Length: 323
Image (cartoon, rainbow, N blue to C red; front, side, top):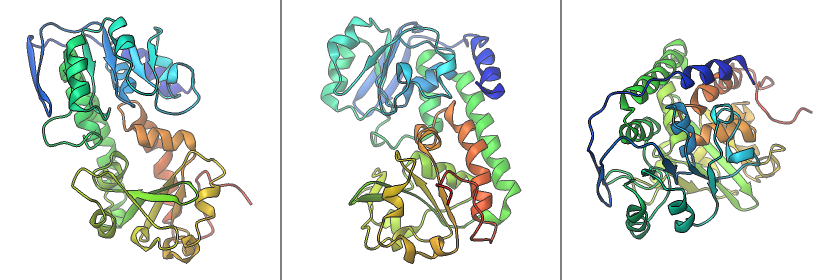
């Protein structure tokens, strides 16, 4: 456990419960949610939801598995904060399992739930879904944290932590003026024939945007609607993601699916060494986009980008295999 995580652990344990008025009304895309009293038993059906709850000093009674082989489905930046033994929800939502956890509130801000599922969950406990007009996975990292904090009666603390991360991102942008306006793609290649990139609606891309980078317009132009957070890219024509920087996320630490892409060697960013390869853990932190994972991302990713954009194609500081 790093000193940074240990420090965060003790800070979070000491968080006071913020004063906030209840009953609380939250408007969602599926209807109005009313939370009568400050919740004590909290269920998250979000794929990344445990992180923000733990960051705000809440021990969830049920959390949802996303991916990764970690105890209690918590990744390393969040695991030290867990003191309880929450139910782990796997696969399709098990409403009986959720009801058995006896929640006071259900957080569903990055969950992909349908209106029918929202109605079923609301029979169990007040359920907080995305605001109207926001896609299932299009809510920004900061709004996820703030809305969850509001539902828990800890909005002020959520805003404080969001502001601290924004300050760090602003500092990154300020100290790297040469990054401002450069194009950056966040791309993936999960397996043969399954490659693509994330749009400006995605959490990962928004973090790079806050550092000063812009999304290649060709990527956003391929999106079917404003809430589409990824697009498929042909492995034979990867020109839409070519630009000043490409950040690869993967669950294969050997990066074989990326390295074997037939069109990759023809991209200018590749020829000039302007790629960053993130391993499973950093890619997971980037993908979670939470109050706990984003400080880890900033610490790890910024030096990697610096090396990628130093003008020397031979240097890198990322997780790609060593020759």
